[in-house]
Image (tube, rainbow, N blue to C red):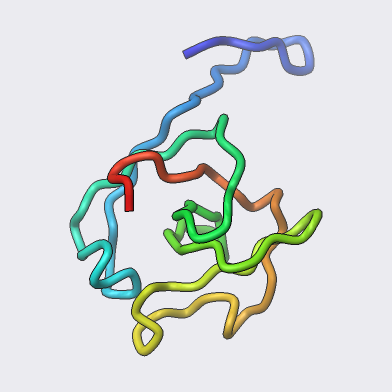
Length: 104
C-alpha cells in the first residue's frame, strides 16, 4: 500500500482488492461465495471480468463492449443477471478493479 497526498492529508491507496461473489449471475464461471482479487492498475479489456460500483455496491461482471468513457457489462448467467442489458452502459469512473484472480 502506498500513501498519496490528497488535499493536504495523506490518503492510503489500495492497488488490490478482494471481493466475495454473491448470487448466481456469474455462473458457471463464478459461484456464490467464490473469492476474486482485482487490480486497480489494470485497464478493463473485452471479455475480462471487472468489479464495478453500481447503486452503492460492487458487482462482478464481464466486459462485452468498451467505449471511450463507458463499459457494457454482462453476467455470464443471463437469466439471473442484472447488468447493462437492464441498466445500460456504466461509466469507466465506476470501475473499481479488473479481476486478476481467478483467471476466467
